[in-house]
Image (cartoon, rainbow, N blue to C red):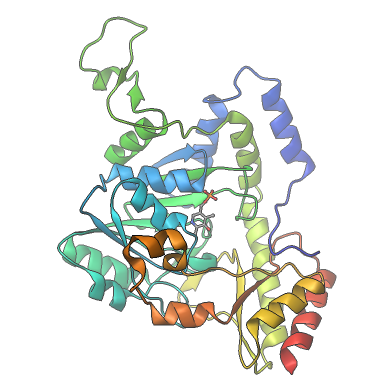
Length: 374
Ligand SMILES: *Cc1c(COP(=O)(O)O)cnc(C)c1O
């Protein structure tokens, strides 16, 4: 089976992890800071807080802007559930704005329609690595005084108008799950230019506890620490961060290969009337986490099954979040984002990862053509 996504782990990645296992710190040691620095410098931001996974990063970001009961946060339905669940963790209400049927990303005009007095933030998701229409989103955010947290789980290395995703908003989150642009096994990060948000994120990552003298309300002595808020154990290990540091050195190479694979797919499918290839927003440079096609004039379920039977590890990104029973049972039964639902009914993600060989890709192309031609 050729999977839809796969990590690339090389000998030096393995060595980096082994070295940490022989060192003094398995967690909360120097590798965490080194990894945070590597990502912050790459993206071009002041602060980065590494956490245990991308979902924890989203939760921390929502907590840092004090999302709570009565607050609405607008996001896209065509995403992984975590983009909306993070709002629920904080007691807030996710509100879904429809997608642009061309880019599959959240449509700024529909964000505007969904704004109420309770709206506090927008969480745009750069689906497949394709940057959202950020200028339009900022215009709305500025007009209504909203926070913007970008879910950049797919978009480490993607660029919007020459700027890296991560430099544009109050906070941006990344995921280092094995299928994502780089991996730490499990892992996530929040990046920000705000010192205040940074300090809140650090507290939230570890129980709300600090030893920072500047924050203590009293100080009994050198052993002293205080819990200032309610945080979690969302710490990431040095073992994971050593892998992250090693992977960061390869990110540009990984992205270059992903872009090459996408170019080959686009070329191969350009004359296929039943296949819609990804549309690229002008002035953006996608890191291409996913290659999503729409299949037209054929039964998507059948195409999906046939490809699976042929050993092609296809997938669907994503089922609209509000379709899930958890959401349906909690007031989302009447929510309909017609473009998200329409796109959902046609999409299939094809294998895309740096280690995909040309011959594997040719096999995918041949089989996709075969099953969509009739
Ligand atoms: C992967 C992903 C997440 C969550 O990241 P984890 O590291 O798996 O917790 C959040 N949002 C999107 C869009 C993702 O693809």
